[in-house]
Image (cartoon, rainbow, N blue to C red):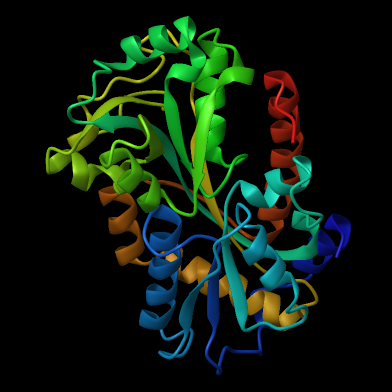
Length: 320
């Protein structure tokens, strides 16, 4: 389904049009292994949909890791016209086709909503000889391939983009960066703790437990300003002289071919979840920034993100 068709469908889908309901178990698909931020989001959405009596208790989260979310996107797209599937998506929905990793584009799904965004944090093992963010930048300038980075869910993800932007703004040769892709951020954290990777790049909520246990040290956050509370002592890259601000967005899509009533149900259901007190409390606790958009606004967001991501990839000289 093309973007213009999706926009027309969503514009013609008022709440009053809703008559279909999810009376069969729903699969909430996510393109990562259990653990980490994306999996957490999928389980949170599933649990709150159940809590709000919007989907049956028997509904599940279906983890489909592989190919930088390509496996999950292919799986969901194969269920055209079936409203009992939704997927939690992020940058690979846009990046995979741009990088030539997958022929599937965002236009092949029904956009449901944008949820929130999280800024990327750079961390090392507690006993790492990388002293701080400035030391990391200097090492990369001297020898870009002397430092390895964990980027979850595959190259081309926002984790990878955070490394590229930081390095590019620091004047580092991007062709020599050493990045290692894992199926989830939890796998990347494990590799970093085991000394197999030097720096893990992911969200604050995925890393804070390991900082609190004394296993990880935070170097910097790719945010416009310092994050609050437990993150308030972590400098931004901008404070360290590197203009890198990168946030991971999370959204929801469904297969193409849904009826107006089915699209209306999901639009209203996800909106109801994001208006719940449980959702708002979780976002505040986990350093997540609310960027809720409805289906029509999400379709436009995907179009804008495709344009900006293509420009970033070209500017950074990254190819597939």
